[in-house]
Length: 120
Figure (cartoon, rainbow, N blue to C red):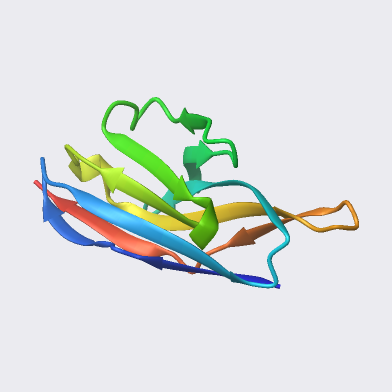
């Protein structure tokens, strides 16, 4: 079993910055990709960013150029630096990872979510 703990959310004015962290713990064999999704009130959860174990990244068009994800494989942790925040970035941000077990199956895990609120 893998647990994800997110931190770093909060309230910030438009144009400001926040840094989210997501640390994985538990019985960890191999983490493939890690990333973030977000869900605004009344909306479906949407993809934000993903980073592979090799460091390749994929960003949604809405955050490209403003958000940067990094990863510390030794600590099973990823960091999301969010700059030039906009009110439309307001959402609950969920950490996500795909964990590959030695028996060949891959399992998806989610964090509990952290609130990011951007005021105009």
